[in-house]
Amino acid sequence: MKTTKPAKARTTATRSSTRRRAARMAVVGVLAGAAVGLAASPGLAAEGRVLIGSPTGPNAILVDPAPGCHRLYGAFPTGTTVSNQTDATIVVYTGGFCTGFPSIALPPGDSTAFSPGSIQVLS
Image 1: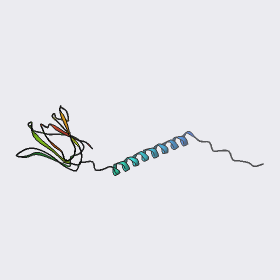
Image 2: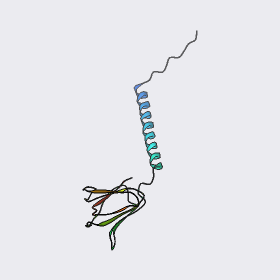
Image 3: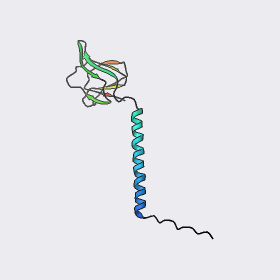
Image 4: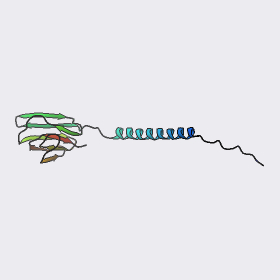
């Protein structure tokens, strides 16, 4: 008859250690996946410029604006030209902090006459 050795009993400390190791591996996997996703995503900022101005010249220029809301400081009268020379769509708002009505979406290469208070760059 063949004899077998009894199985080694697992202690609570062994189970806790195994769980911690599994949790660490899960966190490392999530972080690695996030890093790959960020590296594979296109640049965060829109490439190009947003020109805001009157017929006499630009009053404000946003160069390579990051996605999100950009408050425009200063008073821009009705009829101010907003020109989107970036590779992203922008939304022009009458109020600061991307509020107000009406708002206008401008695709890349488009422009409009408006009274801008803020601009949101969509990614």
